[in-house]
Image 1: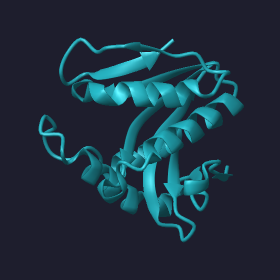
Image 2: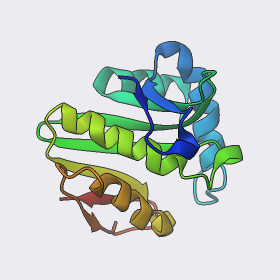
Image 3: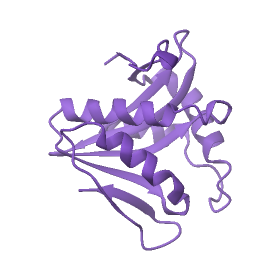
Image 4: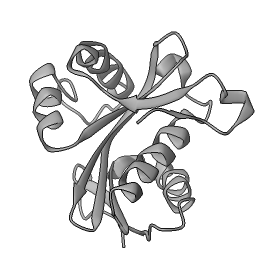
Length: 161
């Protein structure tokens, strides 16, 4: 699944499923993106975890035309529900709307596989991210979503229908 973005300021970006060869670079991007989270002990992911993720779902990569990865998100089909997690944007490229682009691409990917609803995990201490992620997911009319906060500081918050 290669998808060119519609936004002209992002016209040279594309999304595609990650291949095993992409995983070492994605581990670095994901861990760098989560390194600002002082409530996390250690790193967010590793090569073993991402490799296992490819067995149950898809990691979508948002990249520049030259193949340089900028952002990623994990997507998994769970019956008629889709799940998104492990959203990360390279810190050098944050603030450019890339999270929105990769979430929109992932929501479309899941919709095409028959998902009618979407669950999104977000670290609950990053509640400022929920409105923009929800808006991105809701831009796909075939998916229903609502925000449900997590009960504890370290548990994931979920956007679910």
